[in-house]
Image 1 (cartoon, rainbow, N blue to C red):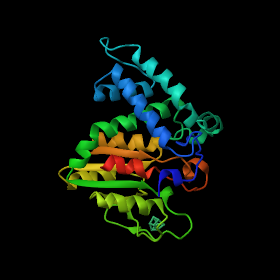
Image 2: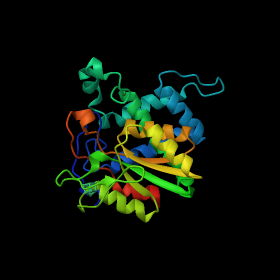
Image 3: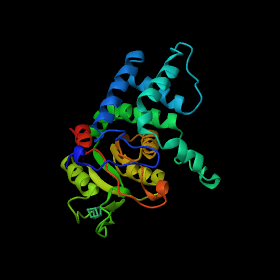
Length: 264
Ligand code: SF4
């Protein structure tokens, strides 16, 4: 299955399809933008730090740094990525007070754009460390499963495991590919990633984690991994459509070719 074959999906806040028939154009734009920002700030880790600070609303950049960098990045991202985040403003307007405590749900549009670059940068920086990790696992968002059959997944050693009951299921397709690269795939259901990651970290000498999740969840997972000395990489869902966002579960997809590109 190629990404061109994926159905065009609209998410609650974002869709990597934008106004295209596949998400390939999104990945092309993200790579181009990251290369552009690296021309202004050639050190990948330093750029990552600035991108993160810019998303936090505070900019405590050193005086030696180019102070026009963050405004330039934010302006360029707004111009280039707004077509992928058209639902954010309405979602935030309609978000009830009781749900505003959820930091993922209250992600602002500028943060989505910065997170998109953060994912690309983390992939570039940690891809090699991920590959060289002695133990590699993947957490795949549960909303990627095929909604037609009753999912036959079972509880595994650390998380839920797909049993491959249908060939069309994105979790099955992803799992087959991940196993080819010696990565243990799991369906992500745990609410306590901190506890799960600490357990895995304690059991293995070096750990690499691959996430397939919606943009804000993926960034949150990647940041947690880095705190725990786990090498992270990840692929964002094509759109955010699970019950947490939409009130009811809707099928989703991800770009399989991009996953393979990350693993090769
Ligand atoms: S292929 Fe795996 S994840 Fe998909 S529905 Fe079957 S058991 Fe569940």
